Amino acid sequence: MSMNENVKKLLKEQMWYLATCDQEPNAVPVAFKDVTDDGKLLVGDVFLETTLNNIKKNGKIAVSASNGASLEGYQIKGTAEYVTEGPIVETFKKQVEAMFKGAATAKGALIITPERVIVTTPGADNKKEL
Image 1: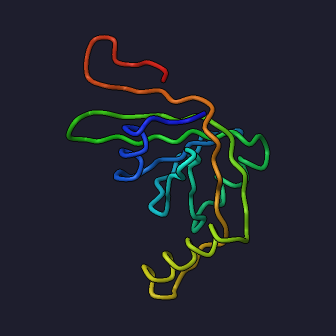
Image 2 (image 1 turned 30 degrees about the vertical axis):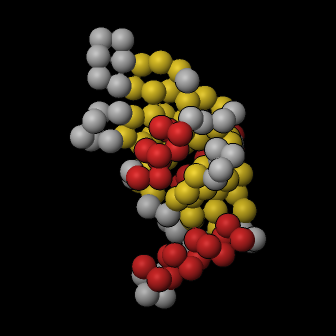
């Protein structure tokens, strides 16, 4: 599934929240993230223990991001794969180590393949699927 440029732009500029579920819902903000040219979402794993456990059980994930000023927001539902080596992981390791001055590192990365994109905007009929 490809995402339009509005979705990619907002995702690159705003904080993301990941949601997964097993017995209980789990939602976490993430700061180390990126969107690939082909629309995959990448997340660096620094503190994602519960998220990873849930993904190992069912592979499902939702990502939410919004712009508080414009009230434009998106929810992306899809599947996630966890990797522990390769160029994506190395990029996140450098970012995390620089931010935390070596006190923390990225242990891996999530590669999220979007299956549905839901947009929310101000107005009466404010929720639609892209």
